[in-house]
Image 1 (cartoon, one colour):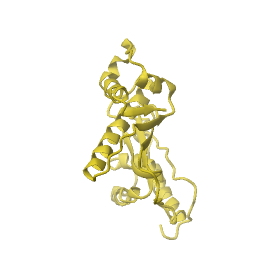
Image 2: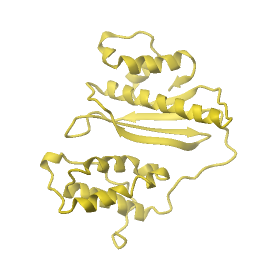
Image 3: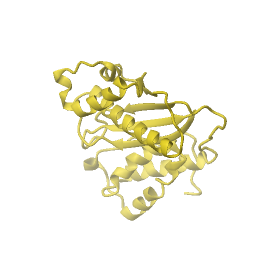
Length: 216
């Protein structure tokens, strides 16, 4: 890959169904290439989602998936100067998090993907892209599950800060681009149609009611 043409365009993030894919001639090559990437996501959040996608096909990789992972390597080659730039002297009085999700993007399972990023003092401290364990019947349900997962990680970060002697008293600011999800988080009334996400609903609502979380 060192002689391949570099690119500065974001790594490809689309996949094809396993059932219609042309298998690769060497699954070992694919697994080795994928296995080297998770370590890089520690300082390269911009490839987290793409790495998450190609990691799902370790057992049944196709030529299309191989092309996608090679695209990630070309992207890394073209953006070697990219990384995390941590600023000093910034206030760490508040945790800011951004939550998002797609809906039934996986062509094989119709499951959705959760994604979030968390910042303290304007610096990224945690980010993740992962499959949701069950199918969702609506985009609101998908976004709310991602919402709850993000809140769960903010609690972990807060606990970690306390262990380090850092106490953040301001409520977490959590941003979401789904109006219905934001409304559910602050609305104390639970409708019958939302009972299938009851646990996530009460988990988030409790944080809002206690003043630990502000939804935006």
